[in-house]
Image (cartoon, rainbow, N blue to C red; front, side, top):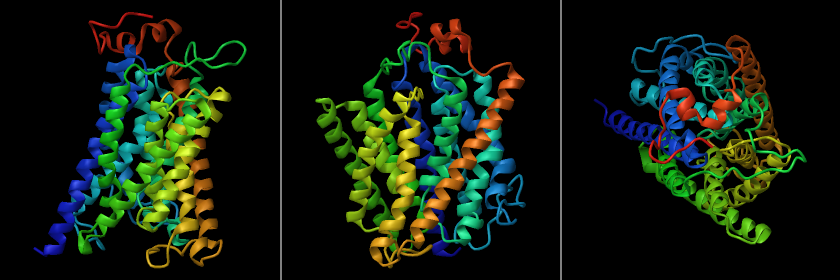
Length: 414
């Protein structure tokens, strides 16, 4: 066996494992950011929906995203059987698992907009439909040789494909489901429905941070010349800068160094650098992450003031930061590193690449939102509503959907 083939397969397999382990990070993030009475429900539905998404991606999604087809969609490779793929110097099965992990993360992000008020059946139905109709077309457009790829769209590891797609699906869900009971007062002012465990959220961010090395560095798809080390460096710098800037801006504006905001800053930095980690110099990674931390602070406030109840801040962390990260390539992509598309504005490329990045953000974001919204309306009609009753929401989804509490000795109905 070719040694490069073996090393590439081992490296990308490690990346796939790290990305799948990020599901555990999202379990802790969503659980810690919400109330105790929903903890078991969140943990269980996350694993269940990842399982459903895995089967659908194997049967249909992978073919639609990466199969041979046209500029809009793939049309071959359904029910993937493990064969190697032409043009790849690594195991086809490993590449499939890596891409499956990305699809699972995008789905998990989408469910942030469902938190604490959606029926379990709504999660299950949307997991099926998202894995077929929402994520694969966007992945095909940018990563599968589709029309955006033909125009040189740059998204190294998925600020748009994974994060913005999931965020726009979450946005559709928050609009249809409406705010949680008690989130807003009659005068429109918002109440802070605090998550029950900041230690969980801090640990989740650390786990996600580590998993992101598989997410970004694994996207090199190669161990050759160890370029993955450079990508990992940029990833770490972006995350660190986002953490620091979110802490600074919260301290300046609120008078306190807000812990949840600091953690959201770290994630925003990671999301933003995801599109550009293989295209920019390290100094630019710091700038991209730093700006992302500031943007996430104001974005969270923006959505809350407009009565968009987003318990996990998916719209801001994955949406706003995803947009910024994708656009940043149009500014900072260097001549030496722009293996796809052209250099950014600050490296002599003019506005061309920035325009391509903007087109990708708008088309992918609008597509993900509209299709998700339509699918959720269909699910709502079929299920006679996708939101639990007021009584069930007050009791908590642990008991109303599963019949037992995640913390049986501690939780009481509110």
